[in-house]
Length: 215
Image (tube, rainbow, N blue to C red):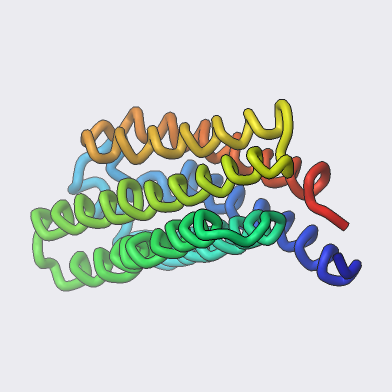
């Protein structure tokens, strides 16, 4: 691999990890009051109305994270021999971007607009449910299916070995568990699996950059 291309991939992975980590910190900090976790819809409406700028900017960070995840999977796919399954894997990840970004636009801009127009808490709750399933079930599910397929291909082709391979598979499977709990409406379990999957995934990305990425 050309050294310049290697360096672009290597540092891109680090930037992606920083963005995803920042998004996770925002979700557990400045954004938390607006998420349907341990509060009422009335409390969420007040929070979003009072913190509109940080709310929207935080969701923009998640939009960047979605694009970053696709870029990482494209880098992973580039390490593999070209075949039909590789194309399916990257296509699944790409397909996950659309519902994910739509959900984040709903969270970042549509819900604040509904609140600003005082259209009622029922409208906010309905949009929250739609957005949660778009991002947490459909988008996240497609990401993790595609990522898991690419990782299995990498194992079969000898790109990933031993504990690095096991780490990657575990991270993607935990991500799929997140989608399952979102579909079941178990918000607390989804929160727990989000935290675990994100930590494992971001650390694995760094391991991939340092131990697997070919020069």
